[in-house]
Length: 410
Image 1 (spheres, one colour):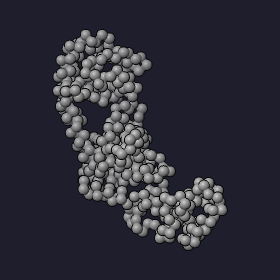
Image 2 (cartoon, one colour):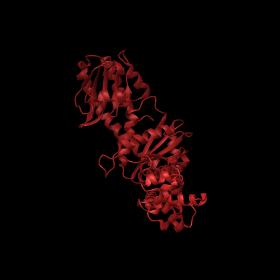
Image 3 (tube, rainbow, N blue to C red):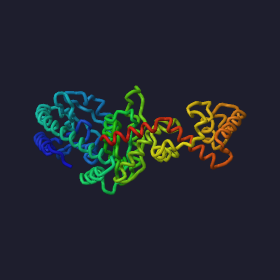
Image 4 (tube, rainbow, N blue to C red):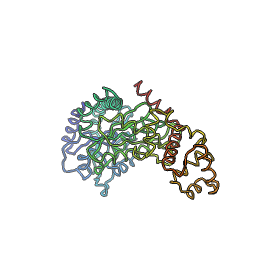
């Protein structure tokens, strides 16, 4: 979609280029190309690559930023860098009352001789880019609203899906993956990280796009594309983990969950998968900080079961084994023993107890529950029940109740 004021920016750039007989390009404040004039034989490999991809490769961004262009109020000359495909160029920051709106670029040596005439154009561009910034902000607000509606159940979800396809934001045949950050993360920081990653991306990345929204109090990303969607989602999820800090943990990262791949009409279910995966990543130390729904393993279906009838999910025999949080409890002993597939040597080592002590505890477990640990079905019942109890003790019901309340109030 062509934003309003882009035509006006293009006319200003074309007029300046014709006057000074130099090619002119204007980027937004993130380094993404907005418009470019015709070339006068001064283009370099980078300019051509940017015209194709519409954005700067990460090494180029780092090189240009090293000259302080993001904080400068005056033009800066950038030395050539053949290894990056750059000729010498001059950067003119475009600001509005100190706020950075973008950059105007000239390529070639001694382009500072054009500073006066370019300066007049920069003033005009400042007004146009300010108007464009307001329009971009409004478009982003509308996209977020559509995505929020899509992720909720009901008629609004189907309507949002149609509008996202109609506006070309998601393809009708696209696969989607939902990425959800932990509830302790700053949702606006999630959106900022995704925008920065998109700006720094190269042409070799998977052809999948990302939309961001705030659902409840967590940042959510919808990744959509025809191929490479799960790979792209995993990359963005890892960037979110590294780039966002928890509100209450200085210097800490966040836990992130990813859904399976699905279709637009499955978006509410995929959101739930992503939220539960993020919860599992935060609560279960054996899992990584970034967890896909598939990687939750047995915990996935157990969490879904707990959502339906948590009071019926744990066999009553398990209550007498104590808390799994206590390292010396029978519940902890049973869980470690069963996680080790009944290998007493491995289990006693993990529990740091003598094997004789382990045998004594296993006998107590059989006496208290009435189950035979040599019986496969009894062992499976105990194992699943212990995992479910662990989830319930971790605060899963409160999480799910809070998510449902937020959805109903949205």
